[in-house]
Structure formats: structure tokens, C-alpha cells
Image (cartoon, rainbow, N blue to C red; front, side, top):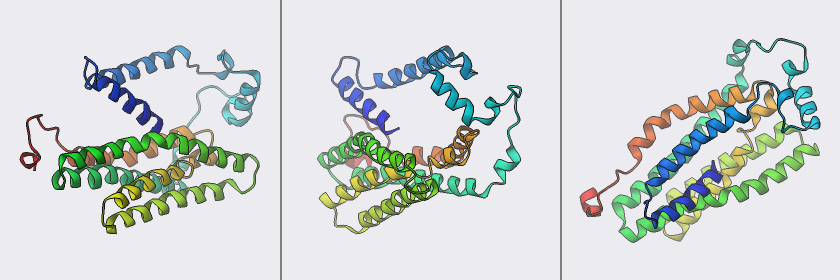
Length: 259
């Protein structure tokens, strides 16, 4: 996600000065999605045995860790919906994902967009909007370092996996909450931007906490459960983001007219 921000932002900066214009970005991203589907149907395999780009070691690991592939069962298998829907820890992970998505989107859509749109001049708006979209481009590098440390701790079994996930989740959620609390009561200016940057980078640890707990919880249905949780947690945001995003004004409009 954050790595996508980086490439899209750099591409937008390039297209802004080109003859095609910045709006060409929508067509490029849409066509990339279609190309991804074509690549998926071309290079995707239903059975790891027929996959030509997997090594023997990788195939052995897959078959030894996925239960229904390692046994001689038919390809069609039933999903244990009742066990999934009655599992209390899954609802805890759903609540964590939903609150984090709400916290992140509310921060980016309200505090730095609407406040500066209606209360500050054009130069300040440009500066803050640049901060809002440039900062996430550095998150993949921080995420890579944090992920390397966490994977090393998990691989060497220094601490139990559940303790590592809970610690990362606590750092991401509570650290982000403290940054936003500081953001509410600071006098503004440089401190306001620092609080926002701190929130962005601390939230990386949430991606190493509850977002990965699905794979530790169950390997057979981790993708399914992750998709269901993301689908449910993003439903309210589908209505919230269009309401809170500013309307694109005409080039000749002044900020007083927009207000």
C-alpha cells in the first residue's frame, strides 16, 4: 500500500509537467489493474505441483504447511464457516483493523485537508498537502527495517509470536493515538507537522501486528479471513471519505469562494 503511494506520487509529479496531464494517471493505474489480472490468469496455478517457477524446496514447504494439499483429499474442500464466525479472537482482530483504518483515514482526510482548506492561505495549503502525500512515500523503507527486525525475532524464536504481534500492535495503535492527542493540543506550525509525521511512521508497527496475525492464526484460511475483515472494516469508509474529501475547484476560484 505505502510502496504504491511512492510510485503513484512520483508518476503524478512526472505527468504533471507532461503534455498528457496529471489526469492521465487514472488511466495508467486502471490499465495496470487490467494487466495484473491478465498476468494472474496467465501465471497463476490452481495446484503448486504444476507451477514452473517454484523450486522443489518451496513446493515441499507449501505441501508440508497446508493441510488439505499434503493429504490425498479431493481439491474441493469445505470452508469451516461456523468455526470462523464463532471465533472470538477474529472479532478482536476485526475491531483492531476497523479502528486503525478509521484512525488513519480520519487523520488524512480531516485534520490536514479541511482545516487548511478553509482556514489557511494557498501557500500553506500546498505545503501541508505536500507533507500529507510525501511522508507516506518514506514509509516502505521504515517498514522494511521494522519487518526485518520482527522477522528475525520470529525466526530465531526469541519471543513467542503472539507476544511480538501484540507488542507491535500496541506500539502502532497507542503510539499513533498519543501522536494524534499531541496533534490536538499543540500550537501548530512545525510541531503539528512533526506530530503527523510521527503518527505516520509509528503506524507501521500495526502492519506487523494485527495485519499479520491472520497468518499466524491459521495458514489454511488466512487470506480468506483477512479479506473478510478488510471488506467489513472498509465499508464505513466508503461513505466517509467522499463526504470529507474537498471538492475540486475551478482554476479561477478563490479560497473564499470555495468556503
